[in-house]
Each structure stands twice: as C-alpha cells, then as structure tokens.
Amino acid sequence: MLQFLYFSFSEAITSLWRTRILNLLSLGTIMFAMFILGSFMFVGLNLKKVTLDWQDQIQFNVFLKDSCTEQMVKAIDDHLANSFFVDTYTYLSKTDARDRFQDNFAAYKNVVDNLDENPFPASFQVFLFKGTNRETFESLREELANLQGIEEIYYDEEVFQRLELFAGLIQLSGWFFGVIVIFSSIFTISNVLKLTFFTRREEVDIMKLVGASRAYIRGPFIVEGVLQGLLGALVGVTLVYIGHLGLSRWLTSNPEFILSNVEPVFLPFKWVLFLVAAGGFSGLVGSLFSLNQFLEEHISYQ
Image (cartoon, rainbow, N blue to C red; front, side, top):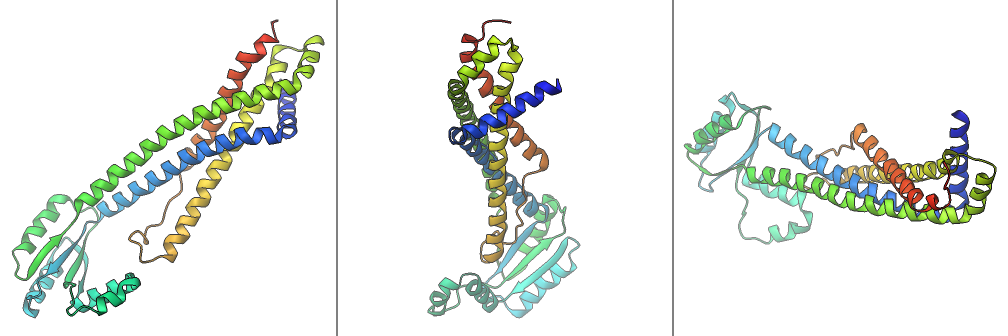
C-alpha cells in the first residue's frame, strides 16, 4: 500500500512539473473558484458581524431644535444621566457637530464655511447597555419624546435589517457563483488530464504490457487531479487572506469611512478547511471523470 501511494504521488508530482504550463490553466481555474467563493463568504461574514455588533448595543441620536434652551438641554441631560438603561452619552453642540463634520469630511470644509448659518443641529449621542432589548429602548424613546426641545430621535433600524439582508444575499451569491466556477474547474481539470494522458500514453501502454494493475495506472492521474485542486484552493484562500489584510489596513488609514472602527475577521478555520477540501474534491471528480471517459478505452482488463 505504501509503495502504491509513493508511486502515485511521485508520478503525479513529476507530471505536474513536466506539464506545468498546461497545469497552470486548471490551477488558475480552481484558484479563481475558491477565491470567488471565499471572498463572498468573507464579505458576508463581516457584514453579519457588523450588524450583530451594532444591534448588540443600541445607539441612537437625539437631535435638538434650534430653539432649545439651556434649561431644556439640562433636563434632557438629567434624564439620560438618571436612566438605568443608558451606558454612555455625549452632547454635541451645533459648533461641535459642524467641527466633527469638517474633520471627517475635509473635502467639504470650504462648503460649510461658506454657509451663512450653521445647519448642523445640537444632539445627544446615546449608547444603551449591551443586551438592552427593543421594548426597553421604545420605552426610553417615549419618555424622551415627551421632553421639550427635541426635534427628532433617530434610530435607523432599517439600516441593520438591510445590512443583514445584504449579508445573506452576498453569501447566497457566493455559493451560486462558486458552484458554477467549481463545475467549470472540474471540466478544465478533466480536459487537462486528458491532454496529460496523451503525452504519457506510451508510458501507460508499457505499464499494461508489464502487467501493471488498474490501480497503478489510474492512481497517479487521480492524485494529480486532487493535488491540482488542493494547490489551487490554497492559493485562492491565500489571496482572500491577503485581501483581508489589505482591507484592515485601508480601514485603519481611512478613519472618515463609516466602518473604519470595524476590525474585519478572517474566515473561521473550518471554513478554510471546507474551501481547501472543496478544491481537492473538484480535482478528484475531474480526474475520475477524465479517467472514466478516456482511460477505459485503453484499459480493458481487470
């Protein structure tokens, strides 16, 4: 058994190197398939993470009227300070709001400076304790709505729902396109192995003449297909990881971006194993398909 495995792997590796230019086609196809599938999984995973993180700690903004007096602001501040559900909150005056906008969007600084009046309202940015449920938030919102000087209490729940839906669609699209490209990878590996057989048909005929078993003839081709799939998948997953590192650095260097405080997470180890296994499985199916179509015409004995 060990001798058979050694022979199959050594012959497969030799063949991969001997026809390396041709094998780049199947390796590239598998790599592209796993990169597409892995990228969709990565984006969907991180969008869901963002949604869950935001939903875990409810935050909302209390925008004040321009006519809101200092006494009204103090009443709102006292109410938030005495609430059992408020973790932290920050008051932004109209000037603070304008300055924050200019810091985050420096390209529009001159536009704001040229305005006759400051268009930004004063507000409170409120964070509730983690795990606070929706009913508690609604109760607090009703209490605040009864206070004077409040223009609007803004909590865009639809954004979270859309993000969650978008994350699901991203992952679903990834599976759809991934399956299509995997099938094309199987087809490509199958045809590459057929061409490989043509270059080794005399060697196979000699093996038949000296009494080599079906396993010894088929083994190297099967191992070659699996290795192509595994190598292509490893490169594809590596490219996804490089993309993950690039995205992390980009978010760090662009603090004005809305998701700049999010730390992207890479695919869980079991997902990486799945992608690599899927690549190997694609190579296995492609090699078996090629053998069943072509080699059976040349290997007619048991």
